[in-house]
Length: 494
Ligand code: GLU
Ligand code: ZN
Image 1 (tube, helix red, strand yellow):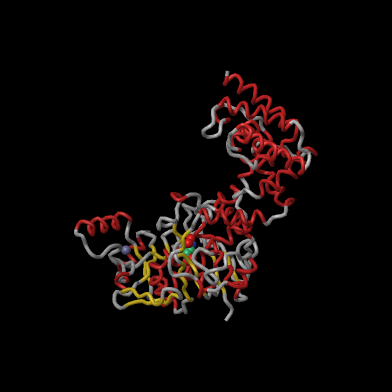
Image 2: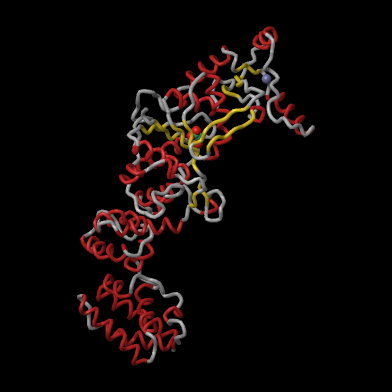
């Protein structure tokens, strides 16, 4: 049997980590088994639908390099793959169920349903939900209601006795008493629109889906879906509900933990390879040891048996670490291309790049490459190269435990050393040695000498390694900034 799996998101918001994890697991499972990965857009909720979300879905999958074998844009033998283009089909099937006595028309007004709800609430009734009022309407009653022009909804006849069981690959058998299943949920609304349950089950069947991998929050819908398959007389697919994605505090991952939309990760400069690698490890592992997996690796190695039953923890720090590793594996030229948009956005560079800017980038990239967690870090790391520092707080010049006049003196003496030039590695090395000696002569720690230079060059106490910064700025700018800093310091010191 050919494996056919699907990712079936509702375009009602941006793609987030949990959704993308579901997409990836389905995609890898299909690839690992020589099966098909299908994308289906479940846009039955027209109120929450947005074009932006749909576009974001396509963009996100494309960015990750996840292509679908069948689905919107590419088509396939079971299309259309957008539910709003299949409304006629759902209607036909719902009406079929009514004819077969598995579903029925309900003519209750919203007011009546609200009344029922209030009464249930007041009497603290155990039964919640629809009171099945129309389930046993006689032929004449129905005819009368039709005559009044009331457009009915179609409800499923959920058995009131017995139990329903479905088998989940991870969780085993899950059984519910039928009387605990939602009492006769609506399948088709009065405007002819299907509800999620109806469209989802019909499509999974029509599209030949063999395995349903989806978030665990859908487990409560399981028994209802099985009842629908039974009503239609169809064989249900295999289920594999995926463990939850949590934050480090054990709560379901949400905005409270940080960004969750892939778009945010993308704009901060996470690489698709890193995000894919890390997200695949949230709730899945190969052997509990190995951490690095390329897309190709996962396409070969993914298996359902290795999915964890326990919830997966999404650790932002760990993702940063992965991203840093992937950045450091990149070639300088490719990385430069990816950094440019950030520098242009920050107003540091304009396109097309001047020759001078190209040169600057050629020396900047290898230095920042070692220190970035995300591509956007390049902005703060390189700001000093493109903007003159302002020295608002002169106390920064003094390293911890150092008096300002000492810092001033150290900077002045350091400047004499730096003036000798540092055109190549060897000269730079000598300068570094001399500055270290200078600290000894002054009877201070090296940092007391390095800090005022660092602040003079970058305006900040944290920066790229000092000698890399000096090299990037070049002789002239280094000299000019130190002179400027000395002048400002002098005013503050005397
Ligand atoms: N449209 C549902 C969602 O947004 C699909 C659930 C399922 O995979 O059955 O999650
Ligand atoms: Zn009714």
